[in-house]
Length: 76
Ligand SMILES: [Zn+2]
Image 1 (cartoon, rainbow, N blue to C red):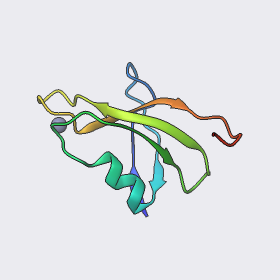
Image 2: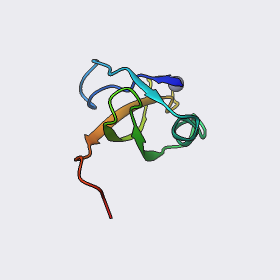
Image 3: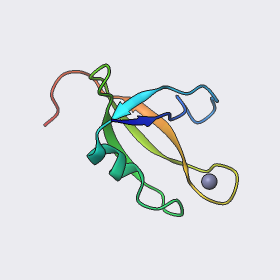
């Protein structure tokens, strides 16, 4: 399992600790210079989140931020 600690929102420095599968972490780790947005599942809680890249302050996008938590009902 891969530890993933995105900020809970764009304007927050608070981070959530998640455990992601290799597939999920790969989707978040394309390139630090690229922007990305994907859906991940926290393996500890089963909760699903939309996350996207965020600037870290050093001209790259290696940080991550939660866009929203998805509802538990299945999506189509
Ligand atoms: Zn960076």
